[in-house]
Image (cartoon, rainbow, N blue to C red; front, side, top):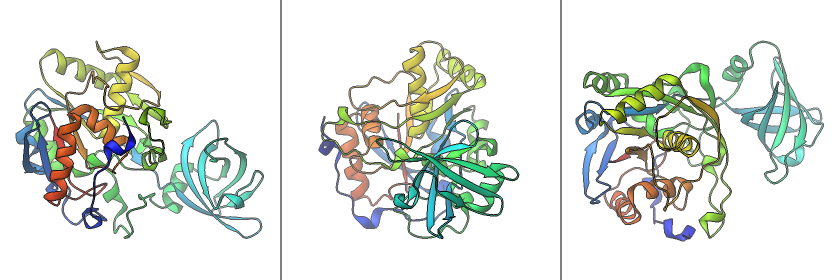
Length: 344
């Protein structure tokens, strides 16, 4: 398929800038992936849509305050965005401007944190930086860093926790972006879901900067997908296996949870799930047959993006293109702080 097959016309006024309503009051489009039938609900209706015995797969990653501002020995300002941790104190990062971040450049971020550019990666142009710090690295980042909000969010968040899920694990800070479908959940909604007999199971996928990168090739099969670190713990494997055995649905919250489960299936097959961790560069687009995901909750994504392609592979091309046209006509809000859909 061609990139242009996944284009839709999105009026700029429908792009959600910042949250304007409580988390669970977002609109929720309910799509029957077999018939394509569409119904309109609110996210707080989710407990009436799911059934006892279903399980929700939630990505418990936490977004790092990953945008740092440093100064070189020459006095030049350099912005650094943390991407992936490497061995020791080395991180892969994006820098801007790149010409001021040559190999050997020393950067100072605060009294507690400095670093040296030690390599420029071929292809991406990303840098490797070796940090030196006094105290816990993540505590320092939380203090001096800023939230790496997507480029289309121009307004300042009044509370950075609004770009975190309520169920994030503070020990798993490692994402450059939030798993945004999860931003709709409240503690109250999670309690209602559990009271109905819906199990909650957690995976971790550290969302990388590739989430923001567009598909540039015409033939989507030629797209080079970014890699992200994931974990599926033993408890989650047990819940998934029991859910499937008892006839419940495995409901993934967000494309990151989908990518985790389907990456596991690519490695282990469609049978019993086992605990696993590793890196995935899985690229899911139409023609892929889903193996572990029975239903998907997701926000509305960028035209011609890998996320639209993943959603289309699950819900069917005609169904999803119609759903997106309907979302535009009904003035749904798009992207990180927008509305959501559930396909089942």
